Image (cartoon, rainbow, N blue to C red; front, top):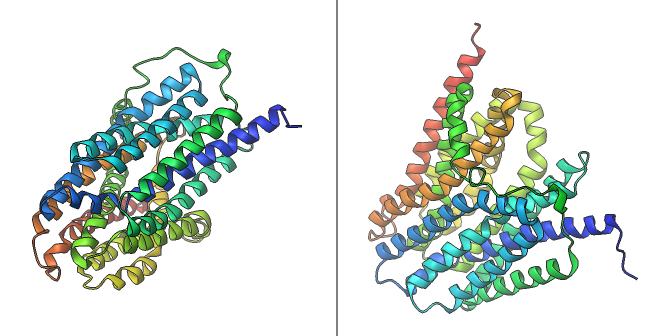
Length: 410
């Protein structure tokens, strides 16, 4: 006999949310090492390949920025379960469109659809908040972070393996995972938001620019927000040029990039899931953020100067502390903000992160397109990484100046 108690329903709901996050990240990870290479079948030159990848990346990020609050507002009105299942089905359809596309415009339309349906992370978090007690909420959100990291370990590895067999195969696999997850949600998972707790749909609450407006109103965190923006911009620029850079520089395909990106996910889980707490206790968030961003300057320069593919692995592992930079900077910002404005402040940081997903591909791929025709050994091929290093250097100097002023007596 199946257990139909409220506790059992909450348990199924929690596993559903974790599976949504995990399989969404597996799908994103599967596509990551394959899409840039797949575009080569639709374009006639490395420059066009880079510009089209920029268009797909910008479109995906823009849709996430615009639709994440919209999906959240819709779920407040109609319930989390319905929105999540619809988004998962849409994500599966988006993978099918990529796998069967006969024209590059279909790929662009599919990625726009993927950005919309992939913006369901906020709804998944809302579902988890609905079913969590105040005592368990932090622990449950920690499980979401773990599922996020594990998905990005498995996704690139699976995408690299399947992409090495056939470039369309990873997307069929991602579609199967999405549809299976939707079926599990439909037949097993209950709704988390009862009708009496729902509220009317509001366009104002669905406006993605509200958080940015609130950011302007809270000037106390000032330069720290600029530090976060510079660091995030560098991070997104690196991510969006990584696969094409290694393809142009080392002639890497999906398998090699899948292996390296799997290592990135593994390091992220190990450092952010276990090591960062000890480092913060020992060094403090300010010193840790400053050290991590400073190390990132040299790591980005090393990536851009690397002449052999094997060099990317030791550079990655030697620079493991860079995975503490993002959480540490957010911690510094949070500590500097007034306790009554924490929600507004952290929401504004998320808006910066979403915008960086749009601006990063624009800048990074535009730089890479200008050097894509050069011989692989030419130092200028690493220009996008040198740009990332410059952004991190600016963030380091600004944070150092800010912390120095904080230590000075009033």
